[in-house]
Length: 191
Image (cartoon, rainbow, N blue to C red; front, side):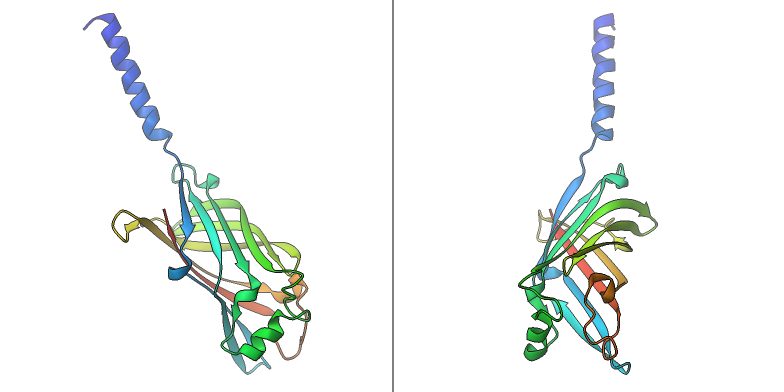
C-alpha cells in the first residue's frame, strides 16, 4: 500500500469513528393524544379530588452520548383544567384560584438533566400562577424506542412528584383543600 493510500485509509477510519461519536441528539414532540398530565388534591382531609389538563404541548431532546445535554419542556393552557365537574372547573379558572385570564399558561423547562438507572433526574423551573420555582423529579423511561405507526419513532416517560400550591400563590381554602398536590405525568413523544 502506498503512503498516499495509507493516509486516505487512516483519514477514512478517523472520519468514520468521529461520525459515530458525534451522533446528534434526538428531538421528540409530546403526543397529547397518548399522554396525560393529572393531579389530585385532598378535600377536607377525608378524600381526594382528581383532575387533569386536557391540552398541553412539549418537546423532549435526548442526547444518549451526553445526557446532560438533554432537555424537557412542557406548556399547559390552564383553561383546559378538567375535574369532571363544570361548575368547579369554572371556579378553578377564576381569580381566587388559577386566574387564567392573568396567568393563562403553566410551563416547565429543564435546567439540569442527569442520567440515572431507569431514566433521568430532572431539575427545572415550573411557572404556575405567575410564580416560577425550581422543582426536581425523576422521569422513568426514555430508553426504549418503538415504531408506531411504522416509520414513526416514539418514546415514553412517566413521573410522579408533588408540589405545594402555596409556593405558587394559590392559597384559597387552606383548611378545606390540601396544600400538597401530587402530580402524575405519562408522556408519549414522537419523532
